[in-house]
Length: 146
Image (cartoon, rainbow, N blue to C red; front, side, top):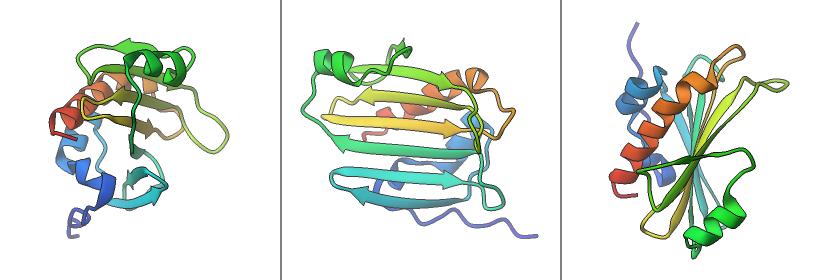
């Protein structure tokens, strides 16, 4: 059986490095799709043979500063993340009907953009255990010069 080639990347998908994702998340993602809605660029990636795990990243230009981010964009129950952008958070959410738990990392990048990285796991997955690796992946994406 041949290994599929990495997908051709465009839009927010340009931020993804499939070998780095596999290294951090332990997930071999092989297909992706990009979309633009208003000013937000989004990319969703997943394995060829399953719906989950699924990784998405959204990038939106923003005039928000750190105070606005903390006041208006920080989800309830989110934990602060240090060393990522100007300000950042992480949160995990339990499984819901039709999907497993997920981990989300959001940050205000130094180049006036809001980014949200979300990894949804299959039912039975452990989002809490995955959270540190999702944060590490977000830091690499941020350093890559979003």
